Length: 129
Image (cartoon, rainbow, N blue to C red; front, side, top):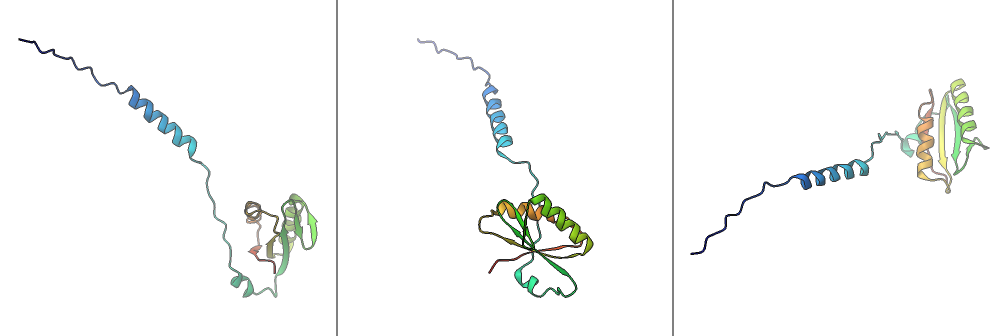
């Protein structure tokens, strides 16, 4: 008569499970971004067409890849922002923004973010004909 061997069961090790959970946690922490997204309100072209500009000064700002052109004068970013801020503080008005073909969308968003806080100014993005 053969005797059956009785196997002792070892307790299950959860070390490998903890390792996998830690690696997943590390992966998701490194793969996610912790930046806060903000909104920039834009008006449509129809809103620009029907806006009364008789009593408001219009500033034309063209955004290029490396510089800005304020009312026909090419300026660096800081000079254009300072000059536009001074002009808008003295005489609030409508800022018409246009983008050259060599400027990126990120450049437009960066400029809009910086100009969004100007008191008394209304920003409008227009397409060049």
